Length: 385
Image 1: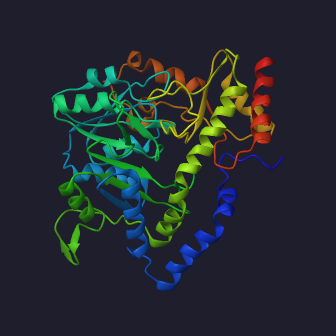
Image 2: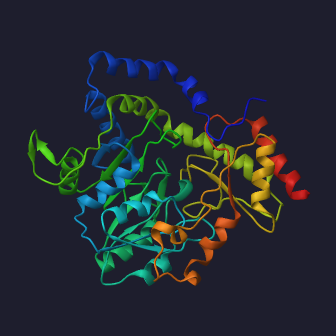
Image 3: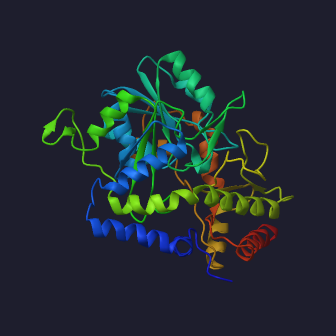
């Protein structure tokens, strides 16, 4: 059996080596390293894939979130509601812009932001909601957009973990994650479903005026060289990273399908074990799809372990050369940087429980049946004592 990795980027690269190498070589030979043709090609191709009017590439996913908020003109003191159970980047940029983060609880089944918790958190100072499409499936965007319309709020999708996923409305219409809210951000960190070979990110929007503002912000506030019309930053996707992403984009659906297939095999192996709660699909499907459905693209395959010492399981897996991850071990409302006396622990019952139970297994495009069988049998052996 080949070595098990949390993410097998080399194996994926070997499958597209010639295309990636040729694409990178093109950039090197034309020496257009910043805002070169490859950046614009990738931008247009991603717009077409997502069905969104504007993709604005930038340097990384955290910048993408920050720039999206800057583009909306949010002011210091404005409140922004987001999920307590996610990576710190989501709340980090809110604080950096001197906005007020308002953390709320998530759903037990799909780990995404809880709709009733959003409603409860809205005040006259609330200006935006940031739903995080955690682990590969969309938050309840239909309900979130209805809340936003009722209260005149912006919706900023954090799509760092769900590129390629779709959201299905009650009437059956499907829209790609990142093309639903007023603006969205994504990360192209190497381990993402669509990842480059360094840092990278992008902002998506269907709003022409907002897209124009954001294009200036990412480039020092310039639309014309040395004319600074807005306060901006230096956040550009370099051409080599765009070349890698453009080479990988045609494979994104097949990559996501490979992740879904691996997830199905994991879940099948754990059937009948009451201590192991497999991921739940909350939008459009009752289970992981067998056909062309893309409601969950499994950036992570995350179990909940009930009545078992999760940390002891992590240690056991590591001893058996199986990497795993705990995403996330500490709620954001308990992080030193983001504590707030307004928070009540009773409002975070689900998150406080999840951080004790979740464990993410290896998930990538190169997982094979032998590896999955070894991983699942090792976990079952531990569970059975």
